[in-house]
Length: 189
Image (cartoon, rainbow, N blue to C red; front, top):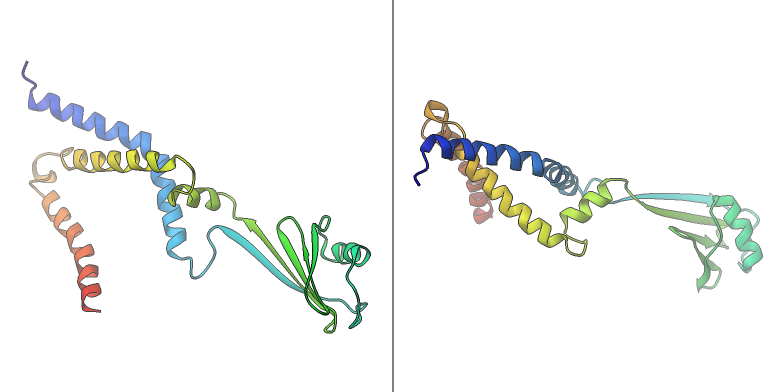
């Protein structure tokens, strides 16, 4: 049984198209989370962090932050119940909440509130991107193999002057130039 070139071309186009549809959501997740992680020096792509300072004029230098005072402080910062009260140094207390802490400085009559929450969608997308979910590395490996398949099949979708032997070879050459320039710059540094 001999398969014609036109039949192979049809199968290649169908494979390329259908794999593109199948992988489109994962490709978008990897692209968006990758862009987010590339700029992690300007923002935290996984967590939202809130930090506020509160004036606590009712505190005295020798105030003991116990359960009663802890309840009063909890109301000020509008948190749920205190999970733990710790005293790392004399006159300083740290109140722990579900996703927050409140550092209390009695002598300064102030408190520093810090809350951390997961950034919606980005946290989950980054978890997939970084393979931090059990078993996802196998999905990621298959995804990588299928991306290679899409890339190779894409080289042969078009034919003639728009195909790989026409203008395609120039785009492939340009695609090689970009990483080579950056690698060359890295070698020089």
